[in-house]
Image 1 (cartoon, rainbow, N blue to C red):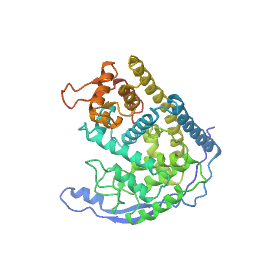
Image 2: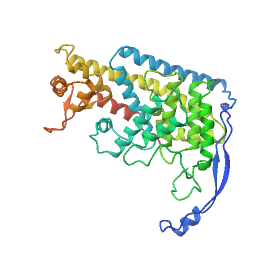
Image 3: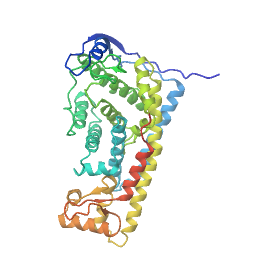
Image 4: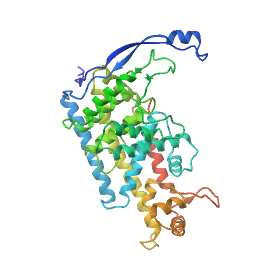
Length: 406
């Protein structure tokens, strides 16, 4: 006999009826206008601020194990590098960038490590790379604002995300109806019709009050807040990436992970259909699937993130061995840890990062190139960039491991 897991009940969304009319603008056929015109129901998010929430025992244990795994990952990353290591900051940055890339890939925005590193130097022409860099800025803003998660903080995160050149304006709540579905002209038949624009401010106010509670398990609270944020869909674009940044703001601000950024979105990415289905289940009144998704994603982040840290640390050790003939105060040694977060560099980056002269920056690059740590790939006499092939290979291998399913 198969035992059905107990649900984790939450109030289901309500419905607000409306009427939609597809304009005769010459773009839609008569049949498409007929199909798209008619009644629809926008959702009304349930109130969570005062929700009395009890987890089934097995699910509570699963979430506790996942939280413990995240804490262990954070401690392990520090232990591998040493608490005073120069690589702690860059390692945290590359984990944040990895998480941003995975979150973007959930939205079908894929970019390799090389193009992402080039985009950080304004050397890439890839639109996807520039979009993912904007998502990195969103994550950075989320962590900066983690101790004061109010409406202004959420708007700031979204403004950073929409700073990409091709993105629409950001940092403002939407003034129109949005939905998740194939049709761009009508909400009828959409997989999810978000609340009417006039209902968004009150729904966000309730969500922010829920986020401020201190009586819930952190990972469970972050998962539910994320599902509610996706239900509200407060922006015309970028809701998923902003909502996943909100998760990290919560687990950092509440002290679950403090030194690094666990690649939770990588875990969600590996079961994309399950992640989407869990949001639907939440709206129907059962939070169990989304809580299970986040517990699984947290464990995945902890295990694979640990491997990523160790692989990157091994690249640093190998590079130090290649520099063994240099004095320990050489500029090359100062630059080396920074290559974890920025595996492609040019002279201007080195000069600014090390706070040194152009001549010293060139010397550091020359020392690393002569030792076989960096390779110059452009072949140009001007505007040259150098890359760490080993670090790029590690990052690309990790991205390949977590490709989007479904």
